[in-house]
Image (tube, rainbow, N blue to C red):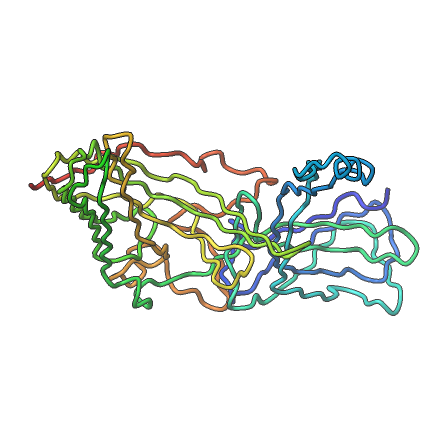
Length: 381
């Protein structure tokens, strides 16, 4: 075999680059003997892909003979339908950029590369508005570099390597992220003809934008004018992944992941309480999929008043949160995150990077659930 080794190495030690920066590195080639090729070509691609299976049911009426026989008997009932269930793959693809060029040679004539070790520098500028790399339940956003030894007479030799892209989000530039948010909901219970007053739930946060590992201050007011006891008030931080497929038809699918959970305490009948606490935003990979149309990810802080009676449903309300890379009131240095320059790569990050499952990765990345963390709860009647 003429080609002993053929690989791609990026200059960034984390294989991670900012959107709008340059992806740089080298293609390494080791040959046992001379080879004749058209050229060495590299291709840089960014894309999103979603897919899942759905059950499809097709109804079929009974055979005509059976229907005619039923009519003769004067049977007024409709003919039973036989149902056949098949599986259908729903999918969608979206490409953000694709750049191809030759490092050496061309497609017009042959060149000879002598035996030995060789390295070739590549440099590709990324578009500015790219979604971050993402690995989800039903889809992903990925970026890769592919190198090809274009041979006129033999199968092409290829080498590929994935890299990651980060699109920073400064929360100070988002008016909605800096503004406080208040949500209120209420309901009246009616069990066995006995109607009561309302149960009211009010949530308040001073802002809706947060960075990884930042505390989310939360105030919860529960006014229980009903005749149903609130056994407990639970707080949940959820991450919701939403996917859209366009083939063979428009279809949507969601996946919810519980990130944080805690309880605040109960509220007696005709009682009221105000809970003041904080939930720490988990250290999860940063996600900015604003420029992706087939995947979006949202974070929700959900508060639920758990009713004690079986005939009474729980009362729930939520607030949508925005995850950023620069905290509100920070210049960026506090979060170890600076504004990228056109030629900057990511040598370190203050939060876990999105990881590709088919690569050898650090096992420290996990999707653990933190239950009843020890942040103090202040309760006032």
